[in-house]
Image (cartoon, rainbow, N blue to C red; front, side, top):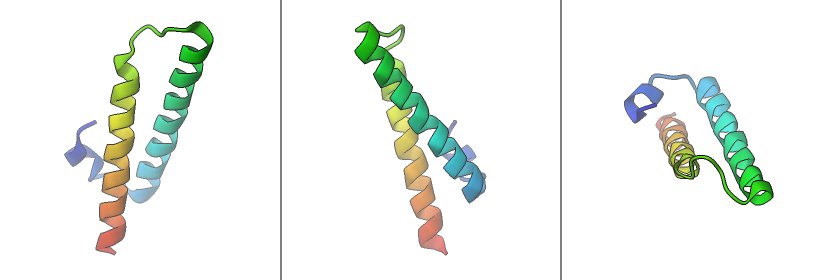
Length: 65
Protein backbone atom coordinates (compact mmCIF):
# COMPACT_ATOMS: atom_id res chain seq x y z
CA UNK A 1 0.00 0.00 0.00
CA UNK A 2 1.24 3.48 -0.82
CA UNK A 3 1.90 6.06 1.88
CA UNK A 4 -0.92 8.35 0.71
CA UNK A 5 -3.36 5.45 0.95
CA UNK A 6 -2.16 4.61 4.45
CA UNK A 7 -2.64 8.21 5.60
CA UNK A 8 -6.38 7.84 4.93
CA UNK A 9 -6.67 4.97 7.44
CA UNK A 10 -7.59 5.42 11.09
CA UNK A 11 -5.13 4.84 13.93
CA UNK A 12 -6.82 1.55 14.80
CA UNK A 13 -6.50 0.31 11.24
CA UNK A 14 -2.86 1.42 11.06
CA UNK A 15 -2.01 -0.37 14.30
CA UNK A 16 -3.74 -3.53 13.08
CA UNK A 17 -1.80 -3.39 9.78
CA UNK A 18 1.44 -2.84 11.71
CA UNK A 19 0.74 -5.87 13.90
CA UNK A 20 0.02 -8.01 10.82
CA UNK A 21 3.22 -6.89 9.08
CA UNK A 22 5.35 -7.60 12.16
CA UNK A 23 3.84 -11.09 12.41
CA UNK A 24 4.52 -11.67 8.71
CA UNK A 25 8.15 -10.60 9.16
CA UNK A 26 8.55 -12.96 12.11
CA UNK A 27 7.12 -15.79 10.02
CA UNK A 28 9.49 -15.03 7.14
CA UNK A 29 12.47 -15.03 9.51
CA UNK A 30 11.33 -18.25 11.19
CA UNK A 31 10.87 -20.03 7.86
CA UNK A 32 14.27 -18.84 6.70
CA UNK A 33 15.90 -20.14 9.88
CA UNK A 34 14.19 -23.54 9.65
CA UNK A 35 14.31 -24.17 5.90
CA UNK A 36 17.50 -22.25 5.17
CA UNK A 37 15.87 -20.39 2.32
CA UNK A 38 12.55 -18.90 1.35
CA UNK A 39 10.70 -18.61 -1.93
CA UNK A 40 11.07 -14.87 -2.38
CA UNK A 41 13.73 -13.16 -0.23
CA UNK A 42 12.54 -9.76 -1.43
CA UNK A 43 9.42 -10.22 0.69
CA UNK A 44 11.51 -9.67 3.82
CA UNK A 45 12.81 -6.37 2.48
CA UNK A 46 9.36 -5.23 1.37
CA UNK A 47 7.84 -6.16 4.73
CA UNK A 48 10.51 -4.16 6.58
CA UNK A 49 9.77 -1.16 4.37
CA UNK A 50 6.05 -1.47 5.00
CA UNK A 51 6.68 -1.59 8.77
CA UNK A 52 8.82 1.53 8.56
CA UNK A 53 6.18 3.26 6.43
CA UNK A 54 3.46 2.40 8.95
CA UNK A 55 5.58 3.57 11.90
CA UNK A 56 6.27 6.86 10.14
CA UNK A 57 2.60 7.54 9.45
CA UNK A 58 1.59 6.58 13.01
CA UNK A 59 4.20 8.98 14.39
CA UNK A 60 2.97 11.72 12.04
CA UNK A 61 -0.59 11.25 13.28
CA UNK A 62 0.52 11.23 16.94
CA UNK A 63 2.49 14.44 16.38
CA UNK A 64 -0.49 16.14 14.78
CA UNK A 65 -2.67 15.60 17.86
